[in-house]
Image (tube, rainbow, N blue to C red; front, side, top):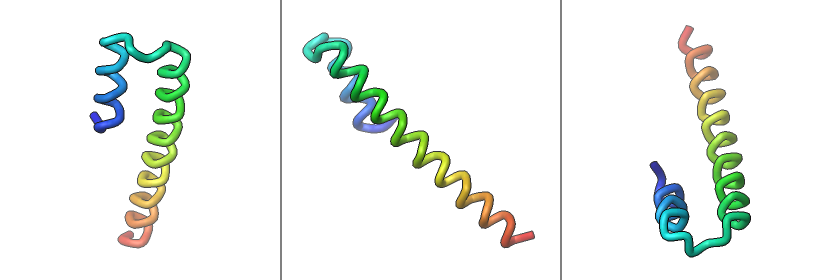
Length: 52
């Protein structure tokens, strides 16, 4: 769990942040994490291709 996710969970738990803002923030984080994960997967695949 990243620091951002932890912070978001804490904020959600305490209810200090409006739900719409939190949802938007979570969506942005998820999109960013997904693209990073996708990018690293592609990089790993390229490395494997080079090794074979």
